[in-house]
Length: 371
Image 1 (cartoon, rainbow, N blue to C red):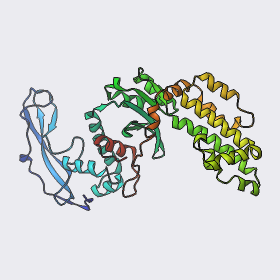
Image 2 (cartoon, rainbow, N blue to C red):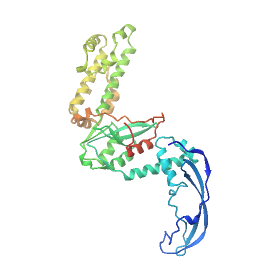
Image 3 (cartoon, rainbow, N blue to C red):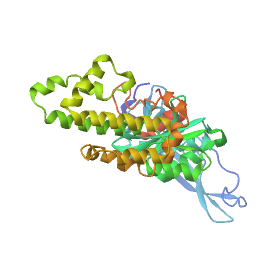
Image 4 (tube, one colour):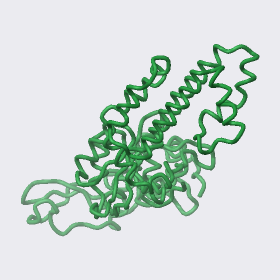
């Protein structure tokens, strides 16, 4: 469906006799109605050729003889609080899923704010009528949409998102409260984020709370990468040739190393001891994370960090504070490691336009969002 012509034309003046006239006052439902003049309304519509029609509609006004309230004839084909027909409003709602609000506003002859308000009303209606069955494995993740943090709530097992909300405790809490049959949730996985943790504890206190081990391992890998770059910055050109392939080796688990990788680590043990120390520390920590050891094991690892590599792990050490119980729960659910860590949201349409969080949410509610 293409956008209608921006050259809107004026339709014919509608006859007031063709409209419904209430038999009694709709406000007090007691008094009879007396004529109280007429009123001309300007209504936008969409004709069969998909052109915007601007029609002048003359409606009768009336006054209740009992309560004295005034009103006009009912217009069942006009959207409530909108100078548009229901047909045009429905067209705007569908077009907003795939076209920019500004283009629709220009075509209809209204402001972008009007289009946005129409779409928000549509989103509210979709929200009111939906029922979300709780998944077995519930997950929450932060994502940037329109340069703002949003929270994606999804089924971790299927990798299927079912809501996108503002990344605030209040918005996340409201979204979680809409879930049905929450007793079937085995575990809830969150990022290392206080808003997500607080919302889950407030709404799903009985569900085990785990932390995304992928995010935890990402902090460890970031520390190792800092060490690698630091060592390279202090190396000569000849030494850098010895470090060929260091990125891949440093981010590969020891059990998965090739013969070349293991041999390189053995050589670096003499030439680049800081690099190997960081690798060994990361390996030990990842083993602790996967095994679900108690916090004492982590404390022993932390206290055993050498003074040379401790500064590179500072961000990870700070992030882990207060999260170890959640990390232990993650290790007790090994299935979580086999799931997709995060659904690939289609943040850009086929036409190359970025989608707003409102459009994304509407597509989720309608089941039209591809992942």
